[in-house]
Amino acid sequence: LKELSLSLSLSLYIYIYIYIYIYIFALFLLFVTRLYQLSKAGKLCVPAMNVNDSVTKQKFDNLYCCRESILDGLKRTTDVMFGGKQVVVCGYGEVGKGCCAALKAMGSIVYVTEIDPICALQACMDGFRLVKLNEVIRQVDIVITCTGNKNVVVRENLDRMKNGCIVCNMGHSNTEIDVASLRTPELTWERVRSQVDHVIWPDGKRIVLLAEGRLLNLSCSTVPTFVLSITATTQALALIELYNAPEGRYKQDVYLLPKKMDEYVASLHLPTFDAHLTELTDEQAKYLGLNKNGPFKPNYYRRVAVRSL
Ligand SMILES: NC(=O)c1ccc[n+]([C@@H]2O[C@H](COP(=O)([O-])OP(=O)(O)OC[C@H]3O[C@@H](n4cnc5c(N)ncnc54)[C@H](O)[C@@H]3O)[C@@H](O)[C@H]2O)c1
Image 1: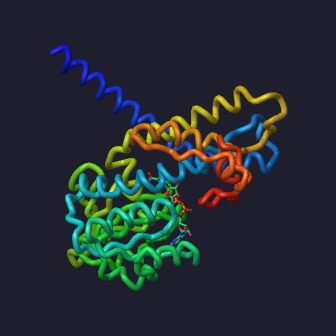
Image 2: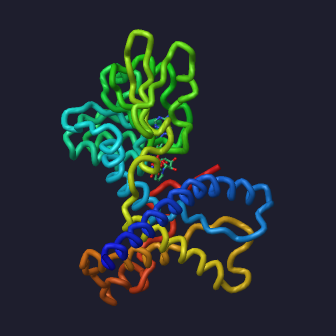
Image 3: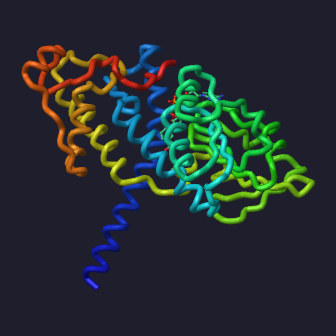
């Protein structure tokens, strides 16, 4: 009994932590853009660290977390079988790459839409068909948005989807799917279970809308605790850096996490995998012009687009 109550209270703590994380995560995305706006307007009164665009956050939260949670979220809500299903993923950034990789591995036929030729070319080189949404909208079984944009899936697209098509969002807030356009008198909404709505057209066609267009994984699945650990470490280090920094190092502006700290966050998590990192020899460090203890990449080597206004 003692062991049972211990494990129950432990699970309770984990759940509380996950929910707090989800809440903070949603606020986080809004805050970063807002912080840049304040800084631009000269209204930011303290230094701020943009942890959201650090490499460890972008790679692990956006790519690897979504690679796992897209399948989890779809399974929990719809129990869909992925093999042979036709899926269109809108946006081939970090989140889109994670979703596409997971679905491809499960045997789905994956199409990608993109507006950026570089990400579009990456999708092609990774073996996905690059299409416009309206070219495949009639035939796909699942539509997933991951663009950070608004009105990526609009009523016209929803009208043309086939019966039973699943529609969900892994990207920004609830702006990507124009859910408001489905609140019209001729369409009937049927709540089939928590976070799952059938929207029914007059001819009987149904689409399956998940989480009313909000983020699927944050609404319908769990977030891997390993990813939580990486993101939380990044946040904690950013706070320590801001607190300990000597006067004048940071002004009233928004900063990216120093590269060395990003590397430190990653190195703290390597022992989990019993991973053995190679050390530079003195000769190699000199040849590359690096300090043997890092940072190992220049600050501009971010692999990710830095948020712009
Ligand atoms: N679900 C989650 O757990 C989770 C995790 C991290 C980030 N996010 C959110 O997901 C969104 C995407 O994040 P990311 O890191 O992949 O960003 P990203 O900028 O790397 O990728 C977004 C991609 O969408 C493309 N795009 C923009 N408008 C488009 C359109 N109309 N049609 C097709 N493609 C379009 C962009 O060119 C870009 O390549 C963001 O809003 C982010 O906040 C969600």
